[in-house]
Image 1: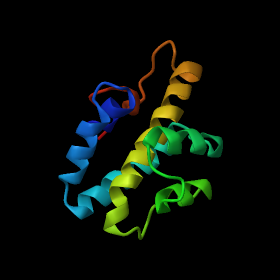
Image 2: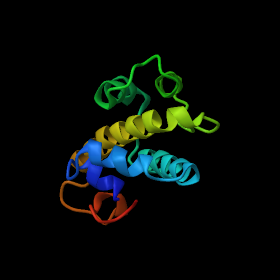
Image 3: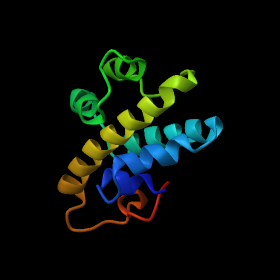
Image 4: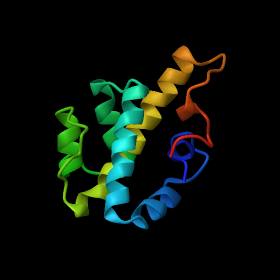
Length: 121
């Protein structure tokens, strides 16, 4: 699945969660690390955190929400039970940051691989 398609609204998040939960744990963790990278490339900001938490549907008191609030995006060492929440939160953050970057820097087109719906994850 192209995570970009989730961020661009081309696929429903329910489909993304189903795909993610079908991965073995090592692949889930690699997907999360790729999303952290994509968020960095899209220039996610700490100010995006509240909207990301709201958009993801997770509670701010869940471990990934607390980590985000502290601007700790690494998600390393999370228990398996928190991986889907992390995935949802990172997709939400990527969606927000990517939309802003597209509007500000890429409105006339670009070659960023994460802006190509079929590229990336």
